[in-house]
Image 1 (cartoon, rainbow, N blue to C red):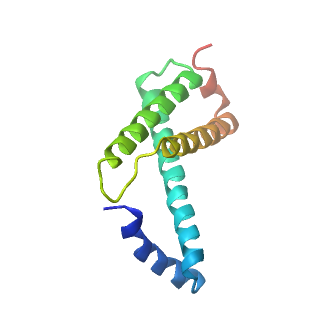
Image 2: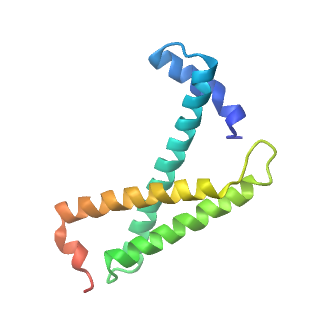
Length: 128
């Protein structure tokens, strides 16, 4: 349902209403980067949600352990998604997308670390 062949039209409509007309060649490149950015941010958000879940489940664990578990959870979901996509006719399952998804998780986990460090530094020293 969310293959590139089905998202191109609606995303192009939104893009052109916000930023004006775009050529077909330019749209193909833009569409690719919009979709990859969606994966990066979506799986980054998932990483932060895993971080919160592990932080609540293991309240005395270190931030590092929570972050590693969050990254592993994100990698598992991303791998499962790519495996599933390999069976769909209009999708592809490629390892580079799992890497992109995990990079999104690492980036947002680092932002979460910086935010927590600045806002509540005492939370980072749960377990020494």
